[in-house]
Image (cartoon, rainbow, N blue to C red):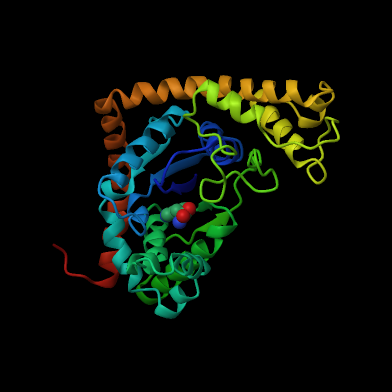
Length: 333
Ligand code: TRP
């Protein structure tokens, strides 16, 4: 069995790019047994979000909303383990041991820290922002994770996790499974509707170019109607010379499950393509939004689902933590 761990920070609304690019794959992957049994853990990593959040209650709200969204997109609590990182105290506990296993020099070389701390300029740069990869190593190693599907920006953090695991095993004896980074099965590449050469992103994009999963149908239709195209008037799938039109085709393709090239042959004008892409997204999101609002209206149910996830996560994590503590020779409580 292959244990797979994916984690996501609760830092705001989930958008169409997140969904079609990655999250939909999480939901689809949970039932697939092709290529062997997979056992998926999904952490909502609120402790990681604390590295940059300041206002009280922001993290909690974002956590509950993200949890509702993960269940709404179809993660099945009977199959996948969806849990909140801070509900499983072992993350903080092993995190400290990881901080003591990684060096200051190694953490100093993390490009994400260098970028993020430089961007924060005169703002507060927490020590947590610096030691964050140690906590991430704990997240991964606690679950005897074999595979961590990550994008390019997180590869270095999985590499440092491997280094930490190997060093710990070398110093204290075989304790951790050494994980590897894998490239997630490619979903759709959704670009900003107003700047179709840039990926849809909540940190860099404009409001008009970004479709949130909770946008209402009128808003979605409006955003698609105003999507940036080009002036040659021909509908063709060609990312390099027609990024806007190709983005609309790719989104429509992801919704209806047909290749963008064949969809292109059905249109002679941009207007109907924009309308259809918008409508397809509305239909795709309709059941997700319904389930989301249902769960948000039933906090008891949501809490029960998260308790169940945390219990399943803790059952694995506590065994690993105990193994690590015993390897180091800490005095049992
Ligand atoms: N650092 C990751 C990000 O910013 C989130 C993350 C935390 C993570 N712990 C993880 C990802 C463990 C994979 C595995 O996106």
